[in-house]
Image 1 (cartoon, one colour):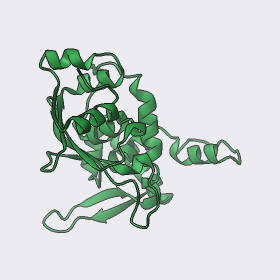
Image 2 (cartoon, rainbow, N blue to C red; image 1 turned 90 degrees about the horizontal axis):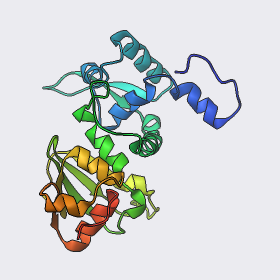
Image 3 (cartoon, rainbow, N blue to C red; image 1 turned 180 degrees about the vertical axis):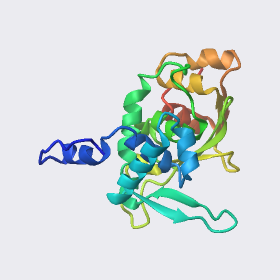
Image 4 (cartoon, one colour; image 1 turned 90 degrees about the vertical axis):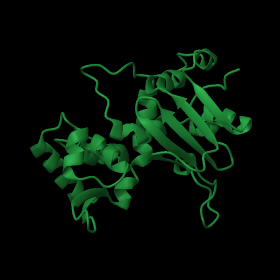
Length: 231
């Protein structure tokens, strides 16, 4: 992916030799949500020329991070998806996103929003150090993007192996029939709460933040998304 090798016998630079090229990690980010057609990837990466996207996908295939698959009928379309090795980059992508949260201001003509990237964005907003020890489902109703389901899974895997906090979290588009908490607000307000730039009590008073559910679960959900429960 990088135009030249760093030529160092170091795990960091050897990884960057493969995934450090321009547009490589955004492609992986978009595939974290699930398999994507070529046209889906183009729509989410409008600054990437089609021929360069083709080149990047071929390179990712060649190093075993991405593979092609055919969707069953009636879709019958070819899609790109991450291999298990490609999906191993998820914690890297999410930690980069968490590093970048404080760098975000507002969308603009030069900084666009792509709704299909919202599930990954919600995962990067999550403060995994505040995950509760129990399972929890939060329906996040973004007034400008619709509902998303944020799930917190068990602390241990099937064989009793402890799971990393990031492995306990998942986001899917759409509402949940089993939500413990309903959190309703705009995307920019969620970002600003995560940055500590807004007082949640003020948003509740102004009718711009809605919280419903068991008080303990609501308090936990607020802390996971980076702010203290409002008064």
